[in-house]
Image 1 (tube, chains in turn blue, yellow):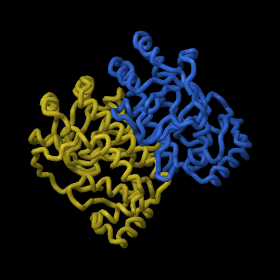
Image 2 (tube, one colour):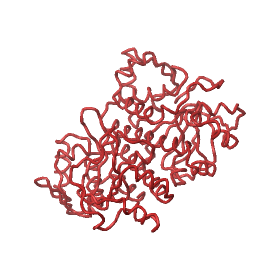
Image 3 (cartoon, chains in turn yellow, red):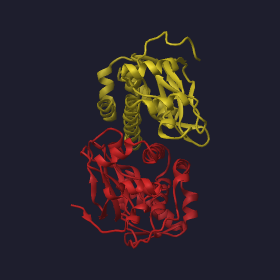
Image 4 (cartoon, rainbow over the protein chains, first blue to last red):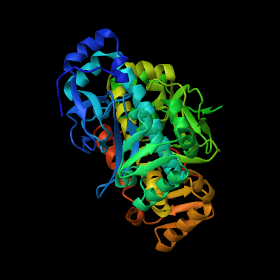
Length: 231
Length: 258
């Protein structure tokens, strides 16, 4: 839902990296937007009307698999923008983007965005840079799905979410987690209880609390550290 | 050292991206292209290497392998004459995070980092094509992730065969189960079992290190939707630009894939 323009701080790293002159020109075209948990930010194969630059919160990118099955292939927070397809040359993309952590974004109409891309070299540069880091994230995700155990992936996911939400506690249903990780609910339950028994997290009624972060880092696969280095 | 070859300049237009350029754009860059033969197994880039060139395969197929900390590998993407190797160069990076290895011997043209950046910065169709290709590669990698998680080895093998078959002039791929296992990141026994089942269905024939595609439609039926997702997306992004009637004569050997 849109609300009053520009009352809040701009924290998105793509936008804040722009030179003053570019930012001043873009600012009037930006609109503050409240991202609500579960809200769809990009619908597969539908024309993207806005580009969202998160300031807080996070957006999950889901690979689509026919029958509404979803699988998380990447997370975008304040370091990037969603969707990237207009920047890369097409009005739509097959990726679904859903708010995974509530927060605030600045959004801009696609036509205005493309105009700005043509005007601002630094904007283009930042977006290319982000596209590349997103591709690295997706590649890492492909490897992680192939080689790593559910517990390791759950630990990685919790760490990445905690970093982006700047909190050790967040709301998460098992059903959602099972989508994120691409495993059955029983698998999530088992992995979560395992981490809980070790005293690393506490999980109850849809709320996950990270109790021992260093232990969670040890429980995660190497992917977390690799991605941390890259961003 | 890579062996440079003499080739007709039109040979480079076999690469769909270079082929899609209007003549005036192509004329500007054609003197910057180097023609190369890429032997099977040649590593174009090691993960972490500083890259000096972008490669546009014309008849070769290049595999992008992700290298794990423990040395394990898995393929995250494939580029043949439909693509290029070295997107990091125009995206502002200098190093690559994956290994690019020749998976089917053949030819390619390459362009230096400096020339690619200069042409990209002009902002014309070259830039547009490269960005569109980047998006299609992103879909390919995403779909590999999804496929890795959710589909059987047999389905993945079919996806892999179809992608390679699209890039090859013949119905024959030279390769061992070991090498496929490396690409797919699974155990060799898994590949042997999956290939055996496909052979029993009569869709492929496997003999002495060569896989023959016998019934492509049959393979498509066994494959998961991932192949279709990737190829539909490629067509959506680049189909309108690709010219299929370029005046090119080519004399490449039947390709071999390991």
